[in-house]
Every structure is written in structure tokens, then in C-alpha cells.
Image (cartoon, rainbow, N blue to C red):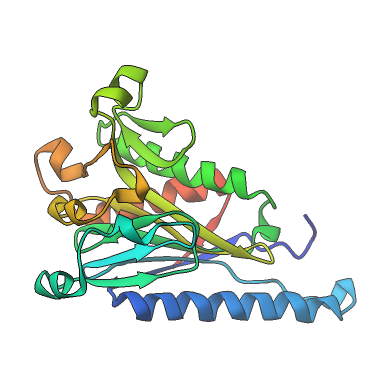
Amino acid sequence: MNSHCNKQVQIQDLGLLDYQTGWDYQERLLAEIVAAKIANRSQPADQQSRTSNYLVFCQHPHVYTLGKSGKEDHLLANDAFLESIGATYYKINRGGDITYHGPGQLVGYPILDLDNFFTDIHRYMRLLEEAIIRTLADYGLDAGRIDGLTGVWLGYESDENRRNGTARKICAMGVKASRWVTMHGFALNVNTDLRYFSHIVPCGIADKAVTSMQAELGREVPVSDVMERVSQHLADLFEMELIR
């Protein structure tokens, strides 16, 4: 870490956003940060510029996305059926398998230069999970991790829960990093229509369920409130200064 590290992070709430538009926007921010890092290499240390960081929140219309390590047969619907339910499908460049995004789900895209924080992707993923775990605890939900399965789960506590199907995923994660600049991120089911998950093998895991905050609490939860709590927990864990 050096004197040019920038821990300021700009928060953006883009509302309901077309998936391709959001992807293109992430790619543009990442490219700008990478270009700034490359330009700094040719400058003396005292003339290098600080790189930017962003925390982008949105919701997407119904869409299925397949990560580069995923299997296409984990999408259980053809093009005609996807059209009939108003959903689209993209193969994308993040890690992970297939997942679903839709209204009522809080999607977070941290576009961070990890040189401003720490250069450790494993730690980065665990802190994203921890921010979601702490957010869910704010609502009285006991969430945690399952070894070997990225994301955040309820009913994670015992091997029996994992065997009998009561373990259920509430937040999926998949990221990409280029020159220590991150994109993609997490999708937390707040008031998500869980029926859409029946058309995929979520995250490539066939023997476990998915859930939402609404399903667990028996009531709708304002997505804007959840976004504020996630933002603050991320700020605490990463020692960020949030800029609005």
C-alpha cells in the first residue's frame, strides 16, 4: 500500500437496469481504472494519480447469466420458453456457474482497484460474503458459509441440513478481476420471485434450495434499506470512505 491509495468509493444506485447495459457500464469503469494504472507506470511516484473505486447497485429485469466455468445444460429452458416468461440469457466473463437476476433482487457490482485495499481475491470474496452475512443478521437471519461453495446460505450449520435439502442459498456471487480491478459481484435475494430459479440448476448445485429475505421473514423488505445496510457493512470491512 502506498500514499496514492484511494479508499474513497463512489456509491451509485442505477435502479432497474437492463443487464447488457449494466455489463457494458462495468466494463467501461474497469477499463478506465486499468488505463489509469497503466499510465501511472510511466510516471514518477510523486506524479501518479489515484485510481477510482465504485460500488454500483441495481436490479435487473428477468435474466439468466452463465459464468465461464458453468455448464450450458444447467439452463433448463429453451429460447422460446425464456421469451414466454420475459427472460433473457447471457454467457459472461465472471467466475461461477448459472444464476438468475430479477426485480426484487439487490445486485451489487463493486468496481474496486484492490491495490487501494489489498491484493487477495480470496480475502475479497470472503469479505463480500461477510458483508451480506452481517446485513442478514440485522434482520434476524442467521446466515453463513458452506465450505467449498461460494455465496451466503441459510441452514448452513450442519452436515445434516446440507444432506436433507434445508440448506438454501440467499446470495450468489461471481467476480472477475483484471490487474486487481474487480467487476461483477453479488446478487442478494430480497423480494425475489423464486419461481424463476426452477428453470436452472442454481450455481450448478442441484441438491440445495434457494430462498429470499421475503420468504424467510414472511414480509417484503425495502430493497433500498437493504442496500444501505450492505453499503455500510462493506465500508466497515474494507475501511472504505463512501461517497454519494
